[in-house]
Length: 56
Image 1 (cartoon, rainbow, N blue to C red):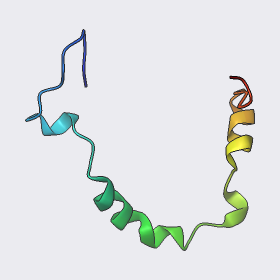
Image 2: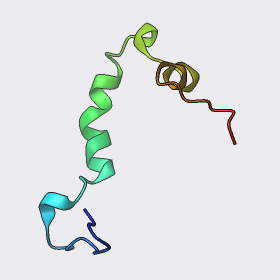
Image 3: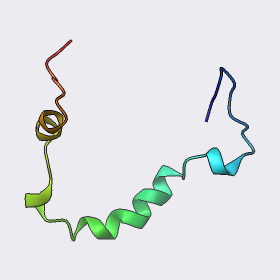
Image 4: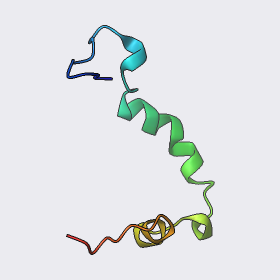
């Protein structure tokens, strides 16, 4: 993570995010188990957190 205007050290593996493809591959099986009734829309989440999506 960059701090005080410095860039992160590219060799510091602890600071790097996992490869997105690897994360998706790990989670794809759990997508079938999700109950659609438990999912929230973007508007529902924004309302829950008090975010006005129409504000420009």
